[in-house]
Length: 153
Length: 103
Image (cartoon, rainbow over all chains, first blue to last red; front, side):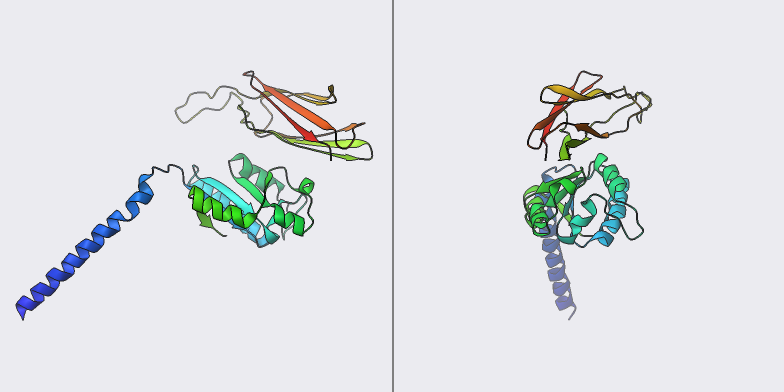
């Protein structure tokens, strides 16, 4: 009875050890690349209310981790806040917060497919916005090829 | 090489509206870094915009101008499809020239 118990615990301990060993090995290649800066992509596709939340999130993000490289990808209704004269529910424009974030290193990328589909002229976008061909492709590419983390506020 | 400017020019009724967003740290020379040493002044000193080889706008910038300055001006007599060229020079002699086609 007692011997069986010992055997069982030994077996469990062994499983635990191998599990721990494999767990330690697994993340090693991911973190060994000395990636340096944390990179994050924010997806904005739901209109100005989401953009207001995102502005606060972005500010907090940069306060907590000033070294982070942040790219905002806007498509669908998410491009609205980057159009000149856009206002949030309280009537404040987005120009000042976008310019402030932009000068602290945040990039704003807008989907050209959205602009075409919604007939928004590139000339009407804020100066800080840069146009890319497809928002979804950009979000996928940044994550898959450049190792960005994904946040949707 | 400094970061590119964003330049946008639109024509309406013979008047061209030019918007420029420059990427520059615009250090005043008054700030101190974490170790207490003064960060040397490094800011744009002159901005010029030209249309068909002729200056249509000139500005002198000093340390009081903000980081990443934005500039908007209008001039008469531009036509769609032509180019507006904008150049800045900073106090270290760095230069940056960018152009935009009038839309």
